[in-house]
Length: 322
Image (cartoon, rainbow, N blue to C red):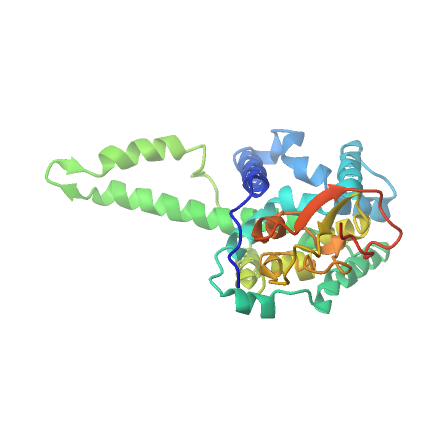
C-alpha cells in the first residue's frame, strides 16, 4: 500500500483554527467561573448565539427568538456554501473529539474495516427529529444533546470542579509539607505559581455541590472514550447539531472532486476520514457527513482528490469526477 502524502498546509491551518476556537471557548467558560451571575455579559454566550439548533429549539418552544440568536443564520448561510465546515473547523466539542480520535493507534487495515461509512450514522438524524418533536410537546432535552450545552455542562459540573479541587490540594500539600533538598524548598516556586493561577485558573471559593456532577462526568468520559472505538463517535452517530448542519449542507457549493485517472483505490483517504463520508467514491461522496477537514486530500499519495466550488446539483451524490 502506498504511503500517504505529507500533511497539507490546509490541514495545519484547520488545526490552528480549531485550537483557537477551543481556547476561546475555555476562556469564556473561565470568565463565567470567576464571575457570579455571568456579569461579564454576552461574550460567554457567543458559541450558543451561533448555534442553529439553539435558534430552532428556542423558536419551536417559545415562538420567540432573542436578537442575539439570529447570529445562527450566519452559520446556516456558511453551511449552505461550505457544507459542515462548522463541525470540522469551529465546534470546540468537535475539536476535543478530533484530538482524542488522533490518539488511536491502529493499522490502516483496521481503520478501513471499522471506520468506513455505516448506516448507523443516520441515528443522529433520528435523534434530531425526536428532540424537535419533544420540544413541540413540551419536553426539551436539547441541553443534554446540543454539543455546546453538553460540553459546557460537563466542564461546569465535573471537569473544572475536579481540576480546581485537585490543583488546590496539590498546592496546599506543597505549602504544608514544603518538600525540598537542603535550603532549596519547593514553595519558593510553587507559591508564586499558585498566586498567579489564583483568580485566573484556580477558584478557591468554588464549592461544587451539584449532585449530578459525578454522573455527568462519567457520561462525558464515556463519550470522549468512544473516540478510541470510532473516530468522532459523537459527531458521527449522536450530535443533533451535526445532523441539522448535515441537512442544511447536504448539497453545498464547495465539493469534493475525484480524478479517477489518478486514483488507484488505495483507500488511504477512507482511513483518514473522521466523518466516514466516502471520499473514495466518485459517485457516493456524502457531503452531509463530511467535516471538510481536508484529511482525505492530504492523505492521497496521488493527488486524486481536491475541493472546488461548483453550482450545486439537484442530486448531491451525482458524480463529481473531473
